[in-house]
Length: 471
Image (tube, rainbow, N blue to C red; front, side, top):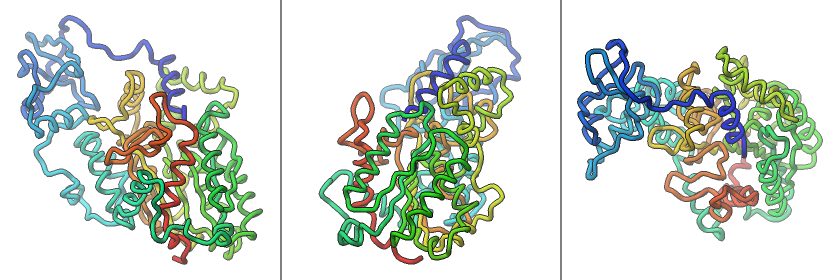
């Protein structure tokens, strides 16, 4: 779970001299570069001559704020230095958060109460990724995150019930749902094959891989026929897809049902196998596949990876060179993260080839009031640089857009979604109600690898045996 840290270090190497700091003194600049900050955004803040505050166009995430001090003369103002007054109303606080996240209008009804403001009715097949990107540009990241919080539950086939069950199982380690798969007999559980798939790992053997190993061991301890698929840390989708397919073919005749548990890039590796090679398996084998549990899964590609590997920004050449020198030589894996596994494949195909498949997504949303993943200055700069130079952006977990961790529209596959606030390393995150995903293993220094077993225990106790039924 160190991908974000490594990217931060890389960013320091290549962008360190470019970190944005407020300059001292006023400069002569064209008035056409600036716009006045709307009064609703200024209402709750404390600042000298705040009516003279302007932002530099375009607004962007964390807008650049200046104070006009003379004819075409402007001095920079530290955005984080502008404070809300004591006793500011909830609406004033909200308006300021909207502005800081790149929005200018906080007077309209939120998209969570009027989804029709997106120009399309609310259906289970609305494209959350495209909608979130549109909202991020037009209303700011905070509003886009709020849309996702509500829309994810709306497209969830259980309307949030599974998420509530997972939260209860996380809080009470003795509780399990009435129909939990753990209530099946020992023999029935032994006939359920659970394939556990690693995510990307730039270092080759990070604590994240140990966390996944612990999760697989926990599933084995529960009595399932758990199998850890030893995919490579950072290779192409196709290379790992071949490994997944070989493991599946070797084991599928020995079991009655199949569930895949995959993290991060492992989901895209799995999708690449299922979408492009899975149909070669017998219909009987494919019918045994009952579920995919996607943990911060790369379901529709990573815009961060797209930017890092394909941008023509010269400073990113340093990033690419730095990554290329790592022992795992991970550029192949990172370049694959930029790809959409669904490209060229009809959306209904997955459900047609695997007719009993159900999907569970654990998706992390940014916890910051500004719609970004909180972090040190470097991490914030990395996220902001992507948005300044990238072609597409929306609230993300730092590596993958939150909406890109769930199924695209049109698959016809029932989907359950568990939402959290936190980074791509989801074991560090919290449910939307504030409860930690791995409370027993979350420390001030991070998470113990045992968090993998803790999280999977909660999920399996909440997961109903109806997952095993024909669709």
